[in-house]
Length: 176
Image (cartoon, rainbow, N blue to C red; front, side):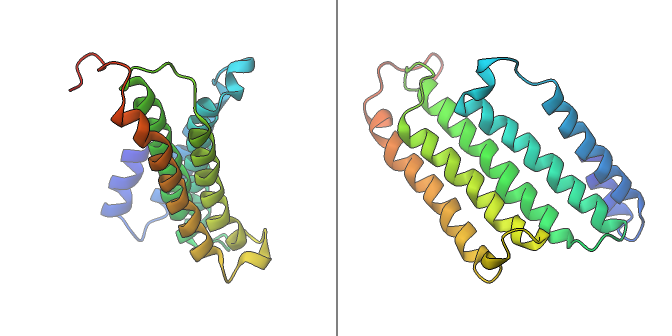
């Protein structure tokens, strides 16, 4: 759906068809959440990060679709929800999971991983919520606050994971 939306949006930028496809993509991401983990596994930070990435993606495509159909929402809000929230959380989740596994460690997240994922989720929310009428006090600061939170997320991850990379327990299979 995402590829179909992107191709259609590029080929027919003035049509409403991409807006409907964006809504379909949103539904697809929300459907992924409906078939997610059951039980206590859903409360693990790495699982929440991946679920959050899907939720941000669904929300981003929802905003893009609604904007294209005339709702009083800037299309940029949806794009930022995709870029800052969805992509940011997905990349952070991969960095955390791969960082642990490729240094020979079990999937037990250090504090830095929890903090980095929380900071990334906050960056996505702070960036978009004021534009949706939530947290109006942040309106003049939300660009800078989001950028600082996003940067801090990667900084916290780097500081927390650098010792793991410098002192791996073993070299993961297939990695040098």
